[in-house]
Length: 219
Figure 1 (cartoon, rainbow, N blue to C red):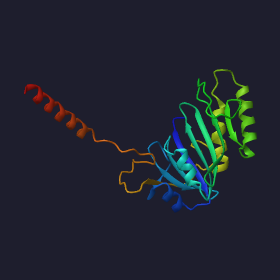
Figure 2 (cartoon, helix red, strand yellow):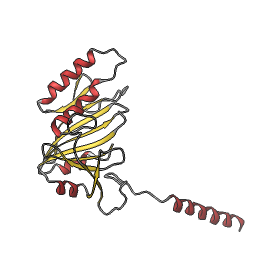
Figure 3 (cartoon, rainbow, N blue to C red):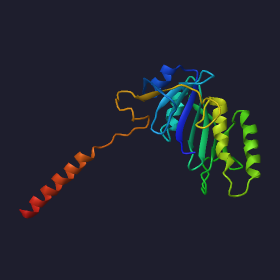
Figure 4 (cartoon, rainbow, N blue to C red):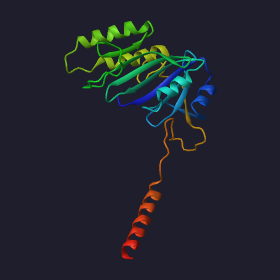
């Protein structure tokens, strides 16, 4: 489980509107499957618009804005740390969420009800209860050193509702296409890009400052 992704599955908006709201441009370049560093879209079997990005590239305020006039399921997962979250939004508002706690973490992620080690806010869809109960039962059959099955509960809920999760059974045959940020030609740039200062210019500025200071000292 070496993946680290954010993804969002939208209904009520077409693909072009979803990309426009996120400031993305479709390159029309097919991808076999989104890996780390890829930013891609696909259409699920239910006709939902799916956007997949790197981990922590989709902040919740952008997800809320994207959901205006629509509804969506958004999720985030870090396979190595076994942390996962899923959120439901409608018309600009978060309606519910389900998340796991990171191993060894003591602070609660949400000031809401804790079910097992799942932290639940709002009123998740009816599918959640069966998924939660099955994963809790599987966990209870294992010893303390076993993998935390609850990591998969938010992901399975995201897959059931949104039509995809990184290693799920649903949506593994989807056709993905690469996207980039509008106005950029570098396909490696993503949704959460922050301007990067050219290191060469920084080094040059420091060198000039040192030379000027040395000359002042000699004077």
